[in-house]
Length: 275
Image 1: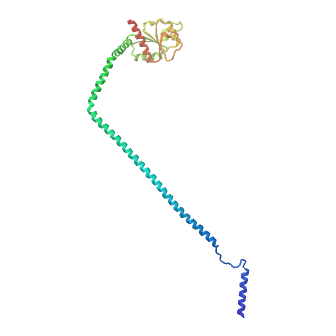
Image 2: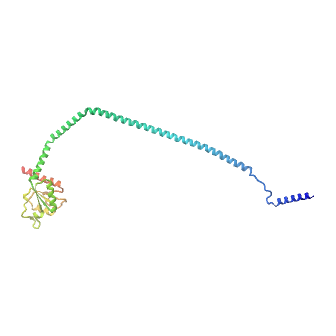
Image 3: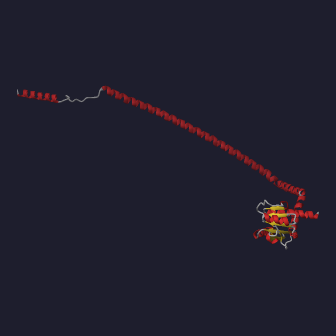
C-alpha cells in the first residue's frame, strides 16, 4: 500500500511540472527538408559555375598566350628580315667602295704623272692667255700706279681745316697716303670773316689743289665765292645741304673716297696740261 502511494505522488509531481512549463516539453528541432535541398542545390550550382568559369578562364588564358606568342613570332621575323636587308645594303655599299678604290688605284697610279703634267700645261696656257689678252690693261695699271706716285711726289696740296684736331687727323691721313707736298692751315689764318676776304699773306695760287677740311657751310661758301680756283675738294663727315657753288666742289666723307677724288683731279689736270 505504501509503495502504491509513493508512485502516485511521483506521477502527480511529474504531471504538475509539465503543466507549469509555458511552451510545453523542449525537444530538438531539425531544419525543414526543403531548406536543406535548396541550399545543397545552390552550392552545387556555384560549384559547377566555378568549375565552368575556371575552364573558360583557362581557355582564355591559353588563347591570350597563343596570341602574344604569335605577335612575338611575327615581330622577331620582321626584325630578322630588316636585319638581313640592312646587311645586304651594307655589303652592296662596301662592294661599290672596294670597286671604286680598286679602279682609282689602277687608273690613278697609272695616270698620276700624266694628269699632273696636263694640269701644269693647262695652267701655264691659261696664264699665258690672260697675260696676252690683258697685257694692255696690265700696262695701264702699271702706268697708272707710276703716275700716281709721281703726282704724290710733285703736286702741292693745301688743306684748310676748321679746327686743330681736324687738321691733325688729315695730316696723318695724307702721310699714310704718301703725299710729299702737303701744307696745312687753319681757316681763320687764311680768311678774314669780318672783312670777308683772304689774309694778305695767303696766296692760294701756289697750290695745285685745295682741300676744305671739316668747314661749315658758311665758311665754304665765303671762301669759294672769293677764290679764283676752278675746283675744290670738300672733306666732311656730314652732308652739307646749303652749298652755293656745288659744281666747283667734289665732296668726300672717308679717307678712301678722298684719295680717289684727289687723284681724279690731279690726273685730269695732268692730262689737260699735256694736251
